[in-house]
Each structure stands twice: as structure tokens, then as C-alpha cells.
Length: 369
Image (cartoon, rainbow, N blue to C red; front, side, top):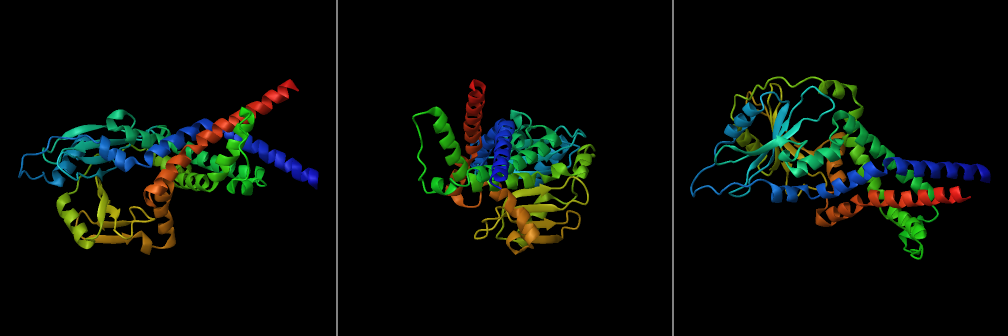
């Protein structure tokens, strides 16, 4: 019985080692990019293009004018959204463009910044390059390695691989977890090999649960990479736009009247019939842990409110979906939680480095034997 148990433990240890070796570099890149993206809203505001402050008393152009300007500049897209809003003079609207060129190996997002007073484009470009914004490039890299649907699938598989690595590591180091958590296991600094082993154990143990949470939520959000229908949809180029007849400003006023407490974080703008106009946002007192967990949908043809959604009042499947983004990026608990997520984002890389050092030590030892 004991030999069988030892055989299984050795096998699990080998799985843990190979998972780390095969996924170490991409998980390092995902961890580092994720650490930066935790503070994307603040960095976006700092890095966004600026324009000269308008003359005193000058009113901004109607939002509908910007919508139609962007819709004509990108005449065949799936949809567009406003993801950044000017808070003071000199700031721009940020539009996100969801295109589709029919090639599943590309993910066709672009960003457009528009001057709300002059009614002109200040900066634009695809998120595959820096013209679309460095952080938008990084977000798309984190999402799919800039590899289209294949990258979406790869990222989902890497999430599963890290989950398996966490699980096998917990089995391998199960007898030492308690000591590490109570800080009773010493850090042996007199040898780099022993130090690498102790660091691997400490980092893996203390980051175990949060790493499991982050990689599971990342896997869940990229689950559509396994869906054949999603792949087929990416092979169909977007048709020519059919912009809404009703003005955006009127639809926005209707949505705000239906839910005055809602603070918008995104406005989804239809480019084809059958798609609702939607405002997503937060409500003070109900922003956590759902993040932007409220929305109002308006029929762009009739101007009638279709739905008012609140994640905290929804059925559990909708609550589950609403939780995935905040739990993945750490946007549910204020600055302390976000700083913790930044720190944990560095742990896959540290585990990869220390794990490689341990593997190299064993391999070198076996070679000398």
C-alpha cells in the first residue's frame, strides 16, 4: 500500500514539474500583464489623449454626432461602445470598435478617441498596435496573446494548466502547507538550490487560493474558445453598418430616467438592427462585488425601455457571470485588494523561475550520477 502511494506521489510530482516547465513562460507573461491591468482604469485616464480646453461657454457636440462620425469611419463592424467618458475639459470620449474581418486568427478590436467639443477624431488605431493605446494592446495580449480565437483557446487552456499545477503542488507539499502558513518553515539562504526550493514552497502556498481563483475566472471568461459556433462566427465578415435612426442623446436620456442612480461605465451602441442600446454601470452602495453590475436596455427603434438589470437581484447564473470579471481583475475590494492582485500577478513568474531551478538541479544531479 505504501509503495503504491509513493508511486502515485512521484507521478503527481512529475505532472507538477512538467506543467510548470511547459507553461512557465506564457503564465509569466499573463501574470505580469494582469498585474498592470489591475490598475487599467487609472492608467487609462493618465495616458488618454488630451485636447485643448474649449473656449468658455462652448457646449459639446451631441453624442449622436460622434456616434455617426465613428460609424462612417468604420463602415462594417459588429458593434461599438463608449468605454471612456470625459470628466473635465480637455478629455475625450473613448470608443471601442468591434470589427470582424472574417479571419479567426485575428481579434479585430480598435480604439477611437473623439474630441467632444470639436467633433473630430484625436487618435485611433487597432488594438494590435500602439495606435489603439498601449493598455488596450496589453489587454488584448492578456486576453488572447494577439492570436485571435486560437489565442482565446490557448489562454483558457493555460488557465486549466495553472489550476492543475496548483492542485498537484498542493498534493506534493501537503505536509508542509501548515508550517509555511504559520511561518514555521525556515528560508535556507546558504545555498541557491535550497533557497529556490523554499521560495517555491512559500510563494506557491501563500498564493495558492488566489492563483486558483484568478486562473479559474480567466478560464471561464475564455470558455467560448471551445465553442465551434464562436469560431464559425469569426469566419463571417461583419456586414455594412445600419446606424440607429433615433439619436443617441435621446436614448441616453431615456435610460437615465429609467435608472437615475446608475453611473455609466460603458454605453453599447448598435450598428445593426435587432441589437439594443444599452448602458452598463455601477450604482453607489451596490458596486461590490459585481463591478459594473447594473444595466438599462432601450429599444433603438421605438425608444422603449426593454429591461433594467441589477446583478445583485438576478438569478444565480447571471450573478455568477457578473462576478467573473471583478474576481479576475481584483476590482471588488478597493485598493488593498487590487495591490494584493498585483503582487500575486508576479507569483506565476517566480514559481516558474524557482521551479525551473529545481528541475535543473535534479537533472544535473541525475547526470552526475
